[in-house]
Length: 240
Figure 1: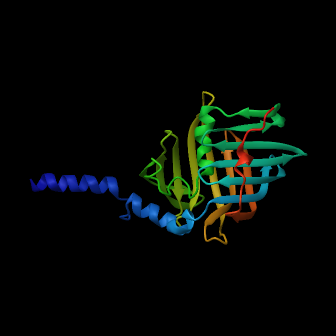
Figure 2: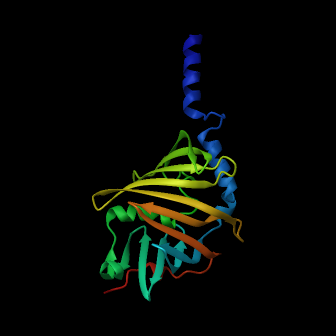
């Protein structure tokens, strides 16, 4: 009987703890505390970001408007032409004249699921159980010389994301997401840097670089404002 109890205890220990004795929830709490804590994150209702999008050696102005859990809209101006992405819980729409889509086009169901994370706050680890996400430890891996803590996250839409945390700061420094868009499996690798503490106390990366199928996009935040009044009509798809 003692042998059985010992074996069960060792098995549970192997599942629940990393090499340095931390549980998943220990790690998640340290991450949430590092980016401002639950109280600060919960006070964020809207975010408006002015920045730049760099693609293929060129940089373009960009404005992002987020109402937490209600909507995300990004407008990037390329040579006087607006490229728009918009996501809401009901769906979303896009305009991309550079790809021949000059009129608003509804997003697909797959794009809707992927876009849902964009009007979230705190990332997939914040209140992950309430969101229906699962998180498991996946050891450690090297990211630019940092032996990062590796977590695997699966959300309620079955989208899988591998997150890499800096063990010193507990900031997310890299994320790999897998999804299916229009029948094609897609992998997006994003790195995060230049973390700053904002006026509200929320800590966020001001530079992100995303690579998808060899296509690289770097987004830099120049100005971030919280809890501004936002008219929900900005998320409505214009009538053609």
